Length: 339
Ligand code: PBG
Figure 1 (cartoon, rainbow, N blue to C red):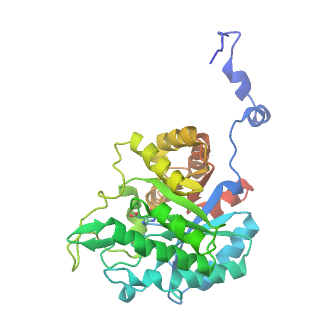
Figure 2 (tube, rainbow, N blue to C red; figure 1 turned 90 degrees about the vertical axis):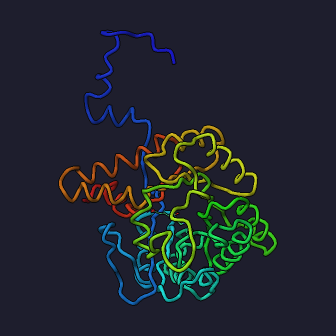
Figure 3 (cartoon, helix red, strand yellow; figure 1 turned 135 degrees about the vertical axis):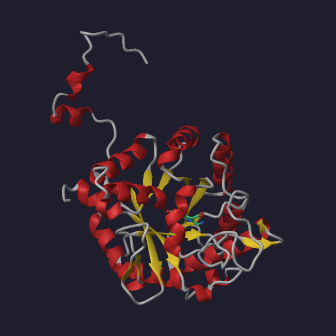
């Protein structure tokens, strides 16, 4: 960069002196097109069940989720990312309910597509909402089995796509799952199905509230010998080069879009990935980030609305093409000037 001017020839404050010049020189913009609404759906009858750590982001019934899809369409939100909270009685060690074509995810996808055909529906591919031990994959001798898990995930993805999902988003971090899912999709005639890979997903404390939201119990407890964290499959938060290797593999295996997760604490990774690969790159502002902003806002410690909008814009500045966020509908209202 070459900016030879010095004070007083250069007075950077000239460009900040009023709203019109700030708007005119602004480099980045947030719009509703940048937002993917993260939504938790449950299989009960109540329209909304509050999640203590996620105020104003309740679990929705299928009926309420269909209404939410319509709302997304009206607000110009391009897509919804769906996460299930199922009846604990339906969980088992193998996560068999993930393969039920009439299970919660498929039922919700059909209802939402019906209500709002122009909203893209993204579904998680992972077993944790369905296993009684809360891990994303199958367990054997206290370890998460890679290749055995991939076989199940591939079936799960196909079932969700047959129900109408537009984007499958493997969030499990098994090695080789993108290639297996892409091959199966091509074989079954689903060549237009998009894959958004949770490519650089870190083992993070910021997923805490999500466990409550989907009702997945404490890892390491229960009837099965199972690890107390996800560190053998999710990435170590000290690493950055590793994220580039993960993304390279997933693109080579057939991912159309890649994701970095969590969001705000990992903006350096978003920037590195976007610069290195120039593919559609998304960041997930996860449950713990949502909880922090809501908690500080509720206490009057932060101006919540401004902090939310500032955090969303930060993703754009870091190079993200979009943000998966529980704040999506609220953010669109704020963009339109309604509080
Ligand atoms: C499941 C999954 C997780 C999230 C999305 N998909 C949790 C985890 O991997 O432990 C986190 C979402 C959030 O915290 O908002 N594989």
